[in-house]
Image (cartoon, rainbow, N blue to C red):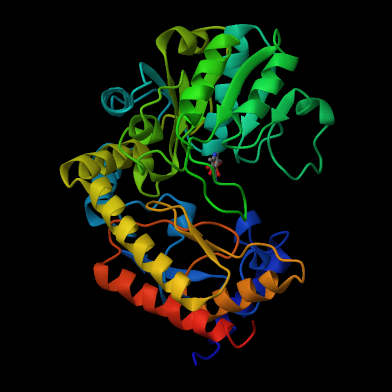
Length: 414
Ligand code: PMP
């Protein structure tokens, strides 16, 4: 039986943070998104696939900073490239450094839909400018969306402080449901500017979904039929499913796509990429500028990250590890008799507990993730995880064993 972790320093820092920052820490990192009292709140350091909290507890980390860590924490080759740039050249100037062109050439080389790119800082920057570009290009207003696309007014789930007019032309649809999308397009036939969809389905707190056969092709066909811009939000799938994103992996090319997270193994950078004739509106009628967008530190990090992903065939290795991990976890789940499901293989592993009439699933979820964190496995109860390159076979085997033991504890509740 694994004991409760000592988390005194995390708790003290959190108490202090609540006097300094509204909510103590930002958004998805708040304790209620984990198991309160069982998970740490502040980390101290990380290396490879492991992290250490401020109380000195060590974990195998499967949240990977919510996605950016595709290789590992403190990846020396990348950090050194950035340090060299900072020391030898500098990275924040009034004009653009040539690293921009090098990076966009690289994106052109690897991403199927990329004729041109605009470099920004966050995923939200990229999805928001994608919508603006699509509206300017088509001269139309409405947008059909599926997935989390960031914190901006047009798409954030929590509506506090946002005038309804900012999102009233945005229509949500469910992943893998082509009929519903078609109905939306039919009902708004002359007004649709864009469809934006995550090519892998990852609804909050629910199972990760891979596209059903023909789904992405169907979305592509509908976008063409109704004359709207097809945008793949590849913030999670980019530089993970394959170098060219899910569009390359599944063989369906959108008009525009957004990339971020894994693109620079943790450095702040994102991109809108797409077809020349659509991206062209950014040269004149659509405005995009921000103080830090052109900074070269993250561009250098992205170039080095992509170089390593290509050179070491990292994404093949990640997928192979993820696939084996998925198979092992499925076996353990089946043997346990606990009503839990595994999804997201090979890139985004997630163990969920399907709703039941008595609400037992909530207890199972809390107990399961409590048992896991006590065993040094950092996963999130309401968000899928990620496999990174530095997760070793031994880490993954340890994790499968921890999952097995945690499920055994649940049998005492069920
Ligand atoms: N799109 C997707 C699919 C995402 O997962 C996220 C972030 N979780 C975003 C957009 C927004 O990115 P950011 O948090 O960097 O603004």
